[in-house]
Length: 83
Image (cartoon, rainbow, N blue to C red):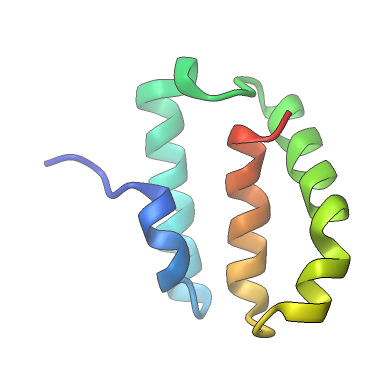
């Protein structure tokens, strides 16, 4: 059975339990397909995640639903794809 797609889990993140399920899916995605990640080392994933978080912070504060768990998941996910 394939691991859940972390992108598909983003909308379901509402609390610690769902955040941890997202993290597990993100880790599985990295283990099975790091070559498909824009950033394929932990330092570049964290750097990209932080950059995306800073770049989108004002927009999130203005329009976000206040779900900090989902915001953290989005920031981590974007470490995968943000340049």
